[in-house]
Length: 331
Image (cartoon, rainbow, N blue to C red; front, side, top):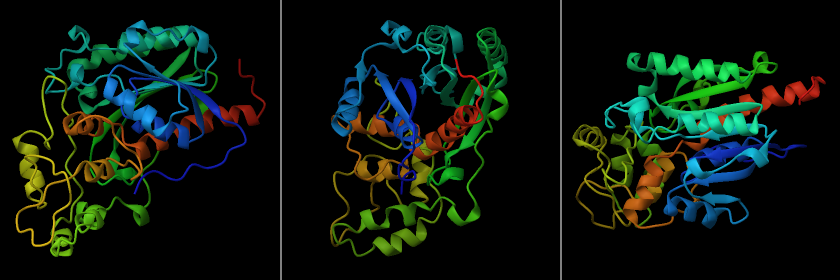
């Protein structure tokens, strides 16, 4: 599983990515035809992951508050998965009062590099009524800079990822291009997300576990949303009590992660490995994660699923590319 294979295109559009994490969004961007000019990330383990998998990428390690986008003026897309805690229930939904709120920094970077489009990902809580004024303020500020903004609630399972994972994607398109952007639509019934069992059965059977097929038949739903936690909260487990119960109903022990797949003769409820969690998140199997188990799982659990990023980025790319094909002036 994973997003579609990268297609050859005559011309790559360019992008600058902030809060890049472990590369989930970046994979979607690159595979949709964007060339990453810079991938900005604060966490050292995530930066190591990006460099491990793509040594040729320009990984900028450091606080986005210290990053300037002026030298990237005219880039096609500014993208990022700005921190979710300010808008999540677990993060107490402090919004603008949360020191982790990086939307102001994203707006600063938009003003600096003046991209043709902006793509920012966040949690479902961003759409809660308590943040109505915040959303309208964000929309107004982008409008003053020449962009029309919309937000879209997308479920990862609608784009082939085997978990629900609702996420909000905020898209701002330069006014002269805005009528060419259409939000992504769910995939057809023929390519629906696979169940947890269908997704992981080969990995569960990798060490000869005899009950893998039996387990897969019972794990016949999509996964609960993976929860990566933060540096202050959450470890190498599958989330709070409620999430663990949901995993248990699928025959998965969510109290911790396993180092390897179940061996022959294993009789207990199996646990996920990091590779299994990554596949559920939509990462390709050859994508490696740097750091220890907890650091690696946080990268996986907090990622923007590559297939969802791909779906949105393709729509943005088509909006920009269509304007170029029709001869519309792109400044």
